Every structure is written in C-alpha cells, then in structure tokens.
Length: 208
Image (cartoon, rainbow, N blue to C red):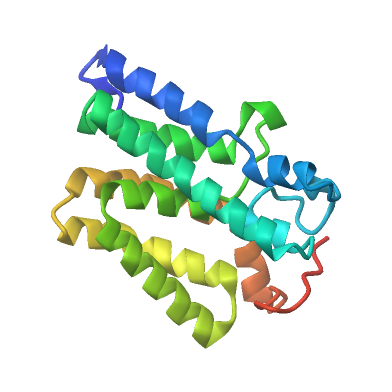
C-alpha cells in the first residue's frame, strides 16, 4: 500500500506513524470508561461490542457520549499528530493504523468496535467539511429510517466520492479502504436490515 510503501521500499516515517496510530486507536475507551463507572462488562451485554452504541445499552447516556467522543478524538489525534511530525503521507498511514487499532485491538484479542466514531475522527483530521457532511447525511437517514447502522453505512459510502470532489484524492483512496472495512464490520447489521430485524433508534436491541 502506497501509504506505507514507496515502490519496493518501506517508508520508515509512515511505518512508525502506522504503528503509533494503531496503538492510539486500540485504546478501548468503551470498556475503560464502563469499568471505571462500575457497570457490567460491556462485552457481556447487547452485541458485545465496545463502541458507543453498545455502551448506550447500559442505560448510561453520559458514558455513551464520552465513549463516542473519545473514539473520535483518538482518530483525529493520530492523523493530526502524524501530519505535524512526519507529514501528509505519514498521516494517511496513521489514520489507517488508528482505524485498524480500533477494530482489532491487540489488548482485547483483536475484538474491537465497528469503527464509525473513529472513522469520523479520522475524517475530521483530514477534512472537517466532509465530516460535517457525514453528520448531515447520518442525521437525515436516521430521521427518515430510525436505523443507526444504516445511517452510518450510507454516510460512510458517500465520503470517498465527496473527498475526491474536494480534491483530496489520496485521502479518498484511504477512505475507500476504511468504508469497505465499515461495511465488513457491519455485515451482521446489514443482514438484519435485509431481514427486517435490525433494531431502530430508541428501541431495545435483541441481538443473539
């Protein structure tokens, strides 16, 4: 991948940025915050996911909001810090690393979140205008359908072409990869959407 490799040579700065981004992205804020709050292990309720949506199933809206914010910030920090220290190409590698770290954290046997919050955070780091568009699309789809998962999928699918239109072709390529990963991580949600069993926003989730 050109984010880390230049021809046949590994770009040391990009490789380092990727590793540091992975470590930052792998911080499981959903699990950390719920444990500090003394709630039930987040992995034992709902979907077993460590993201904000599952944290919300504890009934602690504040914890869910904090998880969402922290998962976003770690994506933004990975990109911004790498860009400041190493440059734009390294920032792309750091963004990829942070996203993979959130999805597959080594500390939790590579079982992490589904990535939407960190996706938004990385997007903010590269193009805040696109992040605003993501939010607008998410809220529009959520208002029309009341499906959180569908809102995230539609909004993420719109980002690569939007970034291309904004003249950020290299970032658009990165987000093609990230969007594909978002869809893969939401494959169970997609199956439930087609089956008509996906829980709507505000309704209790019954997930086997």
